[in-house]
Image (cartoon, rainbow, N blue to C red; front, side, top):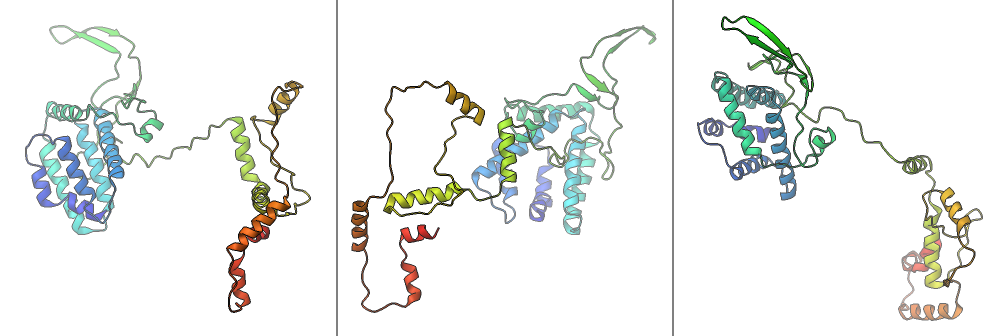
Length: 344
């Protein structure tokens, strides 16, 4: 992280960045973003880089779009800077670069008028207007629709320096109020908060630009009744599944007719559930017809002596008698598949 911040706040890079110029193109912005991300030992593949770039652009678009006032864009930038400064607070050399950037931002942008900030905001929104990439955290918080467009809130505090909408006041030529009209504003607005600090230190008040992953969110736990029962059974039942051993035993019988002793309390076969619950299966069993019009094919995997003899002969063709007796420890390495299955 220190490598990336050092490159981002390099003096030469910042001097070029603060020069009056036209807005970067999307291709140029992506190139700068890729080089900043690869300024450290971190390396990302193309898919990860695409996702990171999409997250960055959509998060910044959301912050610019929901700024209460055009001037609050500067407060959003200060929130970004505050988070970066917290990363490098123990590295004085990098911290001095960040503080110098603070001073340049304050010197260049705080004297601007509201109209100039509105022009900056409008230019940024035009740049991002064709980007409608869905972000999971925005979809989960219901601030973004499924088509990728953001939802503008109709509640909360109004911008600083404004009043709650719902009142029209009419004045005479002398500046005296002569009439008032009230109307429904269609929202649930509250009074404006105090203005955030535009200095290097101070409370920004506005939350846009802060870490959007710092808010704890509950995990989705909505499940159907069957899923809940299955989850409870999985959490309680930790015993090994006997069907796993039955499958191995069946494979052994099919390959060589191996006699496998079954535990006394084990199930005699496999059971296939075609219904969600046992009650549904019992109802289907009661309602089924007595006779069926189709034939039932039965497959028996019983012991076949002739097949066993042929299989043993084939296996014997692959064995070679050693010219010298092998030590007993090496004999364990020549166990065949059936013996290993028998050991299971």
